[in-house]
Length: 484
Ligand code: NAP
Image (tube, rainbow, N blue to C red; front, side, top):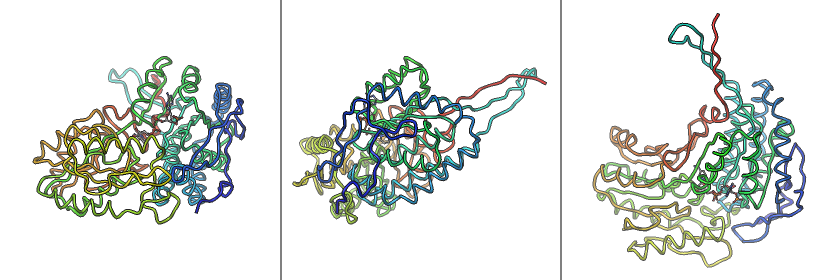
């Protein structure tokens, strides 16, 4: 079942200036399989000298890449999409192996990740400007979009392929060069993507990949380097805050995709079976380890019993097992700290009166497994209603009317996504407008789409990824005033 690593034909050195090379330090970081806790391999532990070399490479390549015709940049991205699709199964296996997610989820992620290359291949040739006459009539106003400069891209472990392509795609389309720092838990997928980009024709130095055990130190040094003009970060709100403070020193432009605490609202007029189906996707995609995961399920009292029982039945029937096993529907959590955190959140809710309808415990085996869990009668002071669970646990809370549902939904510092189920479209639109979040899934369990602007309000982030919005995050508007 578990292939030896050589089966993946994997590059696992730093990727700098188009070459694979060890860290100057020669130190390595071990990478483990969350399904078995076995060592997979090790990756280099980059130093400040490696980071400087990556920036030198990105700087040397910047001028030529910005001047490369958009059609050529587009063709390269299109080729990267085709190569990712060609290698989809190999990449999916690797994602399951290093992240633990079920192979079905990993296959879905690869398809989603590749789409960012296809979408931005299409956007690369659609960088339009604007021209207008100044209100005074005395000048023409020309607005032109230019690449922002070298971009530092930092990604989390939960979508090791998609979070990388969602940044690299628009950066390259815009004409920026970049340095990618993937999460230490899941660095291998980033190396495979770097190899695909090189095969697709990305010139040396345009994309560089660094793995490190000292993310803060390396990032601080790169943000202090005046050549870095962009930081695109996806990860926790806590680390996002630290990075925003640091980026302020050099006024580096920031895009921040941070944490979520998504409400999932089921009104009494909803199609309950469709809502259960949607909840399974919104909660269990990626085993619950998604920033978009339904974190709090608010269900109208009239349909509470029916929804809860049907959801518990579906959750209890999921096949839990090794990520790479094709029959698995829910893999392990990414590491022991995550497993302990999810266990502690469930224990806290139980101690405050929540009722376990299914699951509720860790699995007694190697690997970081938690049973798919449904909790009913969850009290308002349970910690898991206020912080990201990031695991296969669905807490259900009853509500009585629309105002109460909206109040519950907005009672959080986060504002990434919300899910709403109702057959009444007017109510659906009204509630969508009242909920404080960057995205709404109305009668759907999934919002992610490369062609749509993904992002949050409040403490879920700044800026958008995907769509044309994602491209503009890597560009500066230049205004030229003239007359003729
Ligand atoms: P994390 O701990 O914030 O780490 C994210 C990335 O930041 C990793 O590459 C990490 O490197 C790096 N990092 C950590 N501390 C740093 C520092 N001081 N300076 C610079 N970089 C630093 O988040 P995570 O646990 O990997 O991911 C889960 C979080 O990501 C959740 O909160 C989830 O909601 C969020 N997320 C958001 C979105 C979105 O689009 N809004 C999408 C996916 C995930 P190391 O791995 O080396 O620590």
